[in-house]
Image (tube, rainbow, N blue to C red; front, side):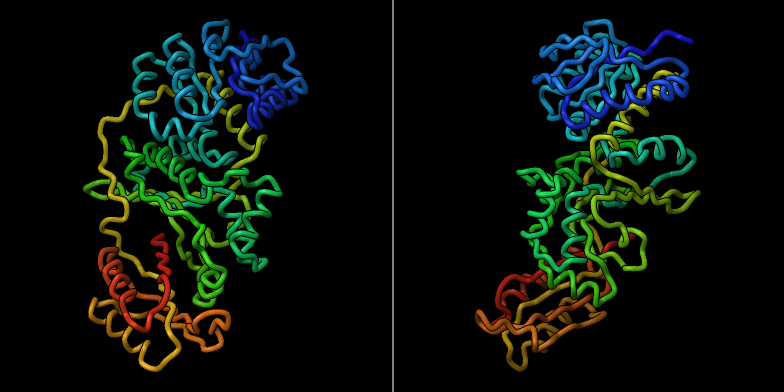
Length: 426
């Protein structure tokens, strides 16, 4: 059998520890599939983990020294941008291939790092950076290589999806669902990146750059979180035939890429609407194959380690490609120019004539109504009496609905904040 692929591992967190275990437990199977052994040669971590058996690998707390020892590939699992970026650059500079699970690093600096790897003729694997154990990078790069890919959409953050599922199925409000997610270990003590959509936006930028073969301006991705969602909105959406999901979507246009992360109403008949809990799902639309959906565990130590080791196997077999540098940068369009139906929940004073005023404003903005829900029993007894007027519009331009909502908010019969959720254009 050929010489072993010598791995230098940076980071012994949840994923790093799982990589150590997976390489040991499935060593024979992995070697058979790789055509040679894949051995852990060196490990660097800020904090030693006595409970992990590193075998014959050496250990150091000096991350910077990792690429300069006897290793063929550096696996970066320390997270963050600055230290991780320095390690990846040093590894490529030292002639080492790189495997990373770091979506933040790739979203912000991937274009420059791929250019450096290309100049050095070195492969970079990043299957683990998006959607955990789902082999979506390989699918976009390999299985769908014959297709022009024009659109991506998916659930790429398990924490947010778990929260929305708990609200949908158990009737929990957002705070209770978040607390449960934290208790179960699905959400961090500080869940900001998850619930505000930053994590999903980073993953979307990585996927869009690969699918559209271009540089993607991460700062131009439109990002909205889920903290403002109300249990009522989920119930009304279901009554209208939809499920509320936190989606990451990117669509290529002639003048750029509309990349966005926000709550969306998904028709309940669509497969994405049925994806629950921490499961991830990504829809890719190709001109030859049409729509394909890729579903699986989007997080977790072993699921993500599975993707890391898959890249190592590809590298050992000589199949992990050297990244091609982006030859163009597509402008970020965000939600500019978006046209889709909208869900509006308008808190209205319970008195005659208010709905007529609302309808008149919508008519003035040429917004047609697809469906309406208005129930007197929804009056709140603990505050100024009001009822929700729930409206599902037909297709309307983003700028038009923004102007209409602003005008609706100024009506005397409207009290409080109007909720607006886009209907997914899948």
